[in-house]
Length: 636
Image (cartoon, rainbow, N blue to C red; front, side):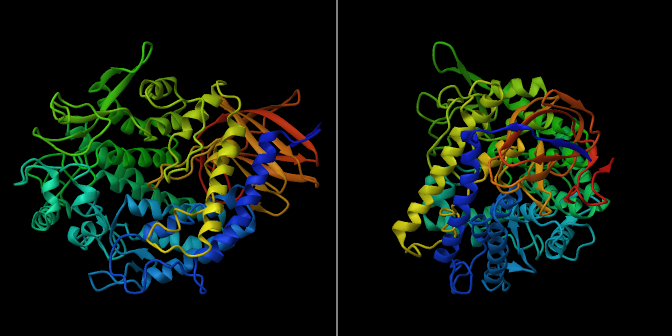
């Protein structure tokens, strides 16, 4: 392994480095208190309550601690992993004892019984993070395989039709795809008030005049009947999130069944998109026919173009393309999500935001003509205040905080994809040279653009500002714990998520050169990853900080600082899964050619080293295995 030894002395650690280490430590002590305050004496979450009957919310419980293994994998204390394991086991037990209207529990065989892959994508982020944190844990590996095998063609639950290459329901899981009942799911906790009066109806051929009519109970009942007729069977783009479940199993095992599932299923959706004149259809029947249950229309499916629009439709193509690039090394797969963004850009409308800048308002939805009558503030409207509709497209607005264009650029690092990010910039609301100190939303959206300004050299204070913001978020949740003084009165499925004192996004960007994964089910995609060689565990050693200062198509710049009181040794790996290769390296006036996906760095106490590394990306077969494993770095 190529060796580097730091020789530059520190008078004191840089501010970003000191803040980074303090953040790790503060979050570790906060997790101890969080567990004491918000889990019962048996270590179980307080939700669902004992008398609860329902199908929704298990993912929200897992989101309350899903990022603890990820922070451990970046260098956090052992307590992150210990608490994460215990919390997950107790949550599974709670879910397996919670009834649904179908006569079986919410969690069956440690997996949700039948849910959509918007929510299952969120909950399974924990599963993927455990792969990074504990790849040698037999229980983690066993679950990765069992969960993925639910979607193989020979699985008894029949989630997947391998011949037609389609998932047989918009909801699926350990009990199969046939327990999708919108009356059971939509009525509680959402109902017509939340889902429809605020977001509009997905179809214009119903007997209702406007979405607010659904607030009447009889109308709501009729809507659930229609939903079950049109949206309870067949495939939808959101199911492309299952490719992460398969990729996760591959990273553990190297079994080509999982790799082939990802590429076969993605190719099926690309073929459907080509058949539909280049726009991904949002519903496919079990026969393989587009629009089978909606009168032949390619729009109007669950979480589709007329439902939540691009915000939901864009998830699957982006996540699946990332996974295919990781597994196959071919960035051509990115053409799939790229083509969908380009459709929206071609149909966009320029709106002047000031004397200098125009913002492109792209359509987020597609549907039939007619009055929509719902709350759509911030979108283009007609003179009468109705939502503007043109050639089927409507809800014209800026690209918002959806990360899809950013992830496309990050995976390709091409100039054209970077120009697309700039083309979609919202000049009316986002300052790219400012970190948002407001309470962080669960998606972590928005900070990617400030980070991009830093990588461009336009926001040099970003490392300090993002660490300060993460500290502020931790302190806000610590203060909430202090003022509540125990369990809140209004315990619901979000109570853990809303109080989780662990914030990982700034650490991902600074230490690994990685963006927040697509929140609804994406895997971590990174430039580098660090391992503590002395303790043979993932993450930065104690006292060591890391800062990726540049990311280009050619490679990265990285600074490592040891501000602790002991000498340290670490391994820097190219890529989160060893998928990249270091081809050349410059540091302290020296140059070398590692031709490896890992380098060893010796950091005596009170030293730092800065290096520039040329990378050849996506050339190694990816794996969770640590860099000291004999089978690590499987070359394609």
